[in-house]
Length: 209
Length: 91
Image 1 (cartoon, each protein chain N blue to C red):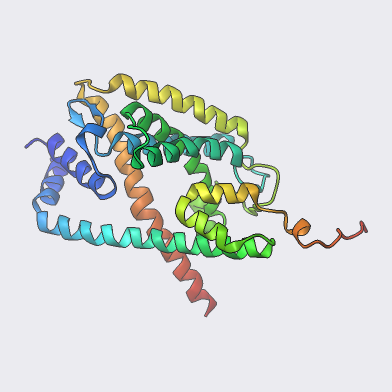
Image 2 (image 1 turned 180 degrees about the horizontal axis):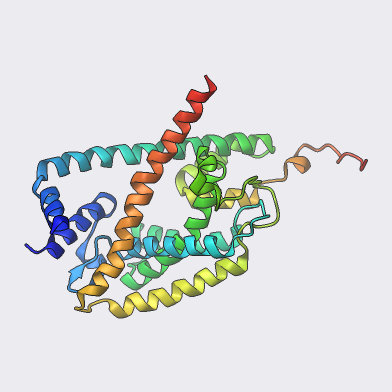
């Protein structure tokens, strides 16, 4: 077994921890199935778009949450598609799953970063640079504007088109370029972040006593 | 070569991988579950403090998750206006 096969197996293992990995719902890129299904592929790549938006367009002086109407508009399609399919109203397609995943991920990342400013992690040096220091949920000035989130929608559409074009390709390079950020996203969000949150909370509790 | 050796070793330890994976698989949802419960409690208390139906919003957030939370943040009333008291005069 080559190193590539072994690494792909490891990626599949991480994917299996968070995803059903049904073959008919998973994209086939670079001669391999991706570690997660189409919806999760979109969501994890969308998270990257969201983090880039936060990095580039956050308003450092603003205290209010990211534009909630845009966030709602971007998360609603995935939830509607998921529920509609689960309840048997319609059968979704991989294209719809992928695209709604992209939008969901791009909206989730700013919300997640903003939520960190309300958590015990807000004093952590790495996090401190990117979160509003005095987050106020009622503040009308959005920390991430509707314009910035609209740009996220456009980037999501472009990336969706790119990934869609790669579906079925045999060039292994594309498998790695897409699956590496996905697996990194799984590790960061499902392993590192919860552990950091817990440890920061425990540290805060201990410092009180 | 070192990377190949490390990955081969990791894959070869099937038992370790399975048990370690299962352990994490149980731990991580548990942590997220606790976070979700804390979020529901916050929504309930916040809604009640604003004169809204806390139980209703708790159920909505419990069922709809993040979508319910976003809808709650959009529709929740202003704390000052829900109290019914007139705003303080400007000083």
